[in-house]
Image (tube, rainbow, N blue to C red; front, side, top):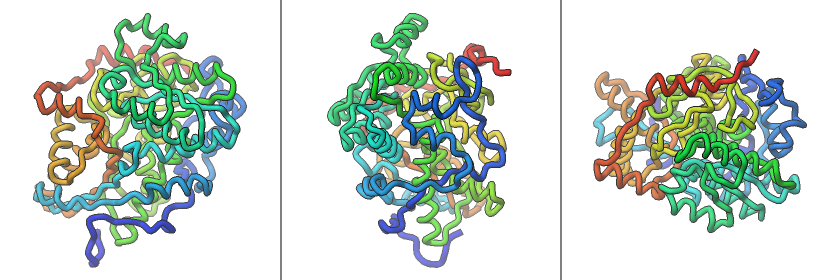
Length: 458
């Protein structure tokens, strides 16, 4: 539903309208995400135990499921002002091309040097690490957006940054790797031979192209093995989704500014950071019984965590050194195929997103790689932005929903998150343009192999 006043192409919030607090959707959830478990004892982890891996403030945020709003420190808000508030764009040209009565909006999170939404949490985690007096941090990265964002944030606060990059992305995206190095980060292809876990994975899976689960294991081992270092991550855990609610809060504020109520809110889903950040304010209204929306998670058919996974406790990493989390998972032993949406190649899903999905607050769909790139090309031609492969999953379903409106004549309002730009993904676009890109859907046997790695929790 839209107001009578004309809607501009881009809705910008004023600087003073930018949110001053992050929203913790867990405070409004009747069914809270289950606690993190120690990988050895299988018992809930204490703050003291988690602080051996994460920054103290991150642990505090991770364990807080009752405080609805958490203040954003002024130093972080000042950094946000360099690229935020991010615009909410009306896709008029796409609507015209589709000849749909639907109204399509996208939150453009690619208007910073890192090229994605990941900087929203990277700067927060780097700030808290610096505040704690640490020397540096370690992390993993899939497609490279998170690693790039963290490298930028660490450079800003003069922290050492060590990145374990999934091997297939390391090889497919050398320019993304070089941006990280330009900001002073050390980038290592994972699985590597520089950690004990990396050596074990290489021995167990010879020639593997790696996965986020592998890279996480190496990053955690590296962090816990060096004094003055902690592990940071770009998705999955609740602390990250908390920071990313800046996306959803700004989106909702921009819509409210023009009296727009969305019918459908869509996000791509890998570990859950952008999806959870985008939908949290809308899910909160649903949980409080104030409004109703159709919330859709879109994941690759090659890594169908929500649509074909199991809701169970599982290891967050392949090396089984991270806390166990109850989530939708394909099993930590599942190694996804080397698709080009590297940021979505994760075996598990955020516990928040998983619980919301399990409780029916949102739905999930899986889509194949070639149809995703077809949607990306169509979007690029009419909207003038080359989208990242990850973002293009949301574009694909947004187009699907708009075409449904064309068939039914319904004037629905669709909102999705354009998580980042695809200018470092030209190898993938080349493969698509040359007709060399294929699709991969794991068999039941392959999924069963992953499920066999699930731990037994009494």
